[in-house]
Structures are given as structure tokens and as C-alpha cells.
Image (cartoon, rainbow, N blue to C red):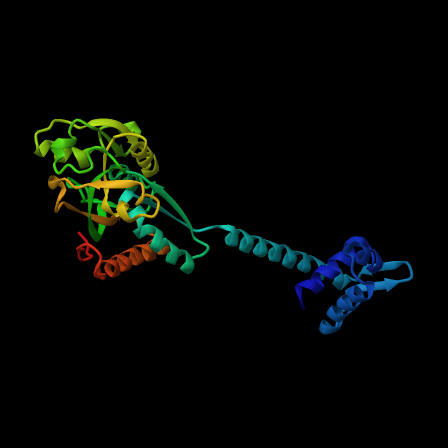
Length: 315
């Protein structure tokens, strides 16, 4: 017995005969007749009485029809469930700060997509403070970001990836491009990448340099919510910004920006980590992504041309 035989039987009954059923289904009448006849022969039962006036269900056919209807209904429900299951796209919500968004996450996500082609990546870029807030509020599963120096980590799961550093950027041909001290940049306006809704919260990266040299607060020209916005500001002005050093080699910016090498910036490294909420159970896909990020970081740190890295670990 097959589902198609049951469907053929239902069609014959619903349309009142083989000819009408074949016409409605746009199939050959002979095939429809053969399908129902084979069902009867396989089980030695007469389901349809054929008379000169047409067809009619036999007594056994009446009972069998109710079972056939139930089977077909459950079959449709099962197929519908499978269709819905197939259409449900698994996703991983990921937040990244500037540094890892330049090299790490694009490379890893390319491999991740090959392994999980049906998994959608919902990725957002923001400052470390915004990403950590999103982790704690369960708005994202993972954050790949710089670890703030004053981070309260009791409720977080932190996997260290590598160390990086920042430098001072300006447009090519900037009049202060050859200065060697932050003091020579103190009177300029600065661009910060962060949340415009929280202006002043995300300027710690430059504030620390100013405080050490007792230069007061830096003059902020703009707080941009994207790296693209910050770079655009630099290209059209004499503003400066402290951004990840990896931006120097990025194909979109290396011919447009220049590094201002100030002495106060030397040997200042910060840690990049993948962070999640300790109490949240990660999806299988998110756990695999964490593993891939760690593996890629270890391989990257082993390259001779790469800056000193750190051992991956959990804190």
C-alpha cells in the first residue's frame, strides 16, 4: 500500500468516478484504474463496486475510506512539519568591535559558512561597552571585542584570542603626520568610534593618553557609530583618531590613511576575546564558531609576520 494509492482512491470517490477523477487530476484514466485495482488485489478486498450507473463504495470500502482519510491527513501534517523545519533558518547573533571586524571575523566566518551554509549570521558592530551590554541583555550570543581594563567579568565567559595595539591615524598628507608626541596633537579634534547616544563613554582609548600627559580631556569632533563614518571624517578634515593598527594594511584604507607614531603609544597592547554570558547555554553553531575563532587566532599568532600574541585561555 502506498500513499499514492490512497490518494487515487480518495480522488475517485470525491469525483464520483474514474473518468472524472482522471480529468480533475490531469492523469490517464487507465493509470488511475490500475492503481486502485492493485490496492484491492494486494489486500484481497473489494473497495469499489462498479456498476452500469457508476461506482459506489462497498461496505468494506466505507470503513477503509475513513482510515485512508486519517492516514493522508497525518501524512500532510508530517510533510508540513518537515517543510516548516526546513524553512527555519538557524542563526548565530554576533557582535564585533573594530579590531576583529577587520581581519579575524571575516576570515573565520568564510570558513564557518562553508561548514554551516544554512546558518544565518546576524552580525553587528559596536564599541566594547555596547557589546558587553548586549551580551548581558541576551541580545547577542557572542561578542568578539577588546577587553576593557575595568571589566567586571563574574557573569561572563571569556576566551582570550590574541593581543593587538592601536595607533594614531590621520589622512594622507596631514600637517602633523611627523610629530612624535601626543602633546603635539592635543589641540586637534578627535574622532571616536562608539555610540552617539552615549557620547563621551567610548573615548577612554584616547582619554588615557591625555590623562597621563595631563592634557585634560580631548576635543571630540564626532562620535561615529561605524568605522566607515570615522574614516570618512578623517579623510575630509584634519581630525585624528586612535584606531587598531591593522587598519594600516586593510585594502580599503591603507592608501588613504597615515600613521602618526607618537612615543606615548608604543608598547601598548590590549586583549581581544570572544565573550558570552556565563549563564547562557550556547547553541551548537555558536560553540563551533568560538572554537574556530580560537583556532584561527592561534594559527595567526604563529605566523612570523604577526605581532606577539597571547595563549588562548579562559578567565
